[in-house]
Length: 246
Image 1 (spheres, one colour):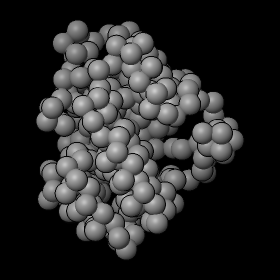
Image 2: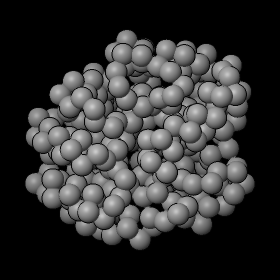
Image 3: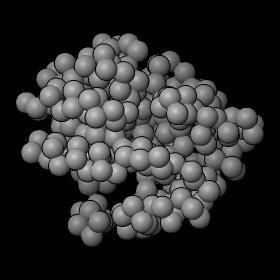
């Protein structure tokens, strides 16, 4: 975390241990969390898979990770499925690859075939500030090639790209957005509400981006939105239960 904070010049709300997360969950009334592990280099595939298996439990739902387009990506997607993990996290900026690179397309085909959930860090990233490795247009390209894939675009569809999210994805494409790091000045509350109204509350997932934010920050944001209590209940848990089959 010290290295990441220095690289991206962004403060974090907590350290990144299971104990820290469990304490934050207890304080916020969160029952279960999805752990989104990230392999940033191909040689990390096995280690990340082992850590995901180790941490997967009743309280923590662990996702695996692979580097898009890498030689062993398909092999490890099979392993993630064989270990009965529910999904895969991709972070194209940190993985130094465009989300819709041609060599990654067989990977998305297999993810769809195995009925895994794939979560993307979508939009801008503070570590590589001049790059856009996962834009709404890239996600739309993947969706058009692999209809039915269970896709989540974090950060309300694309951090700092809300205009493109509205133009290309919101209400127009079959994927989920999450609220990770949305309780922050990079996106204002009226825009969050507009995206939810346009895309549908049944396609929005609660996320915090812990340890960068605490769960309480996004819970407070969701509670403050001008949407119905039924829609808030969907966002805070109902949609995730349906998507993850829990």
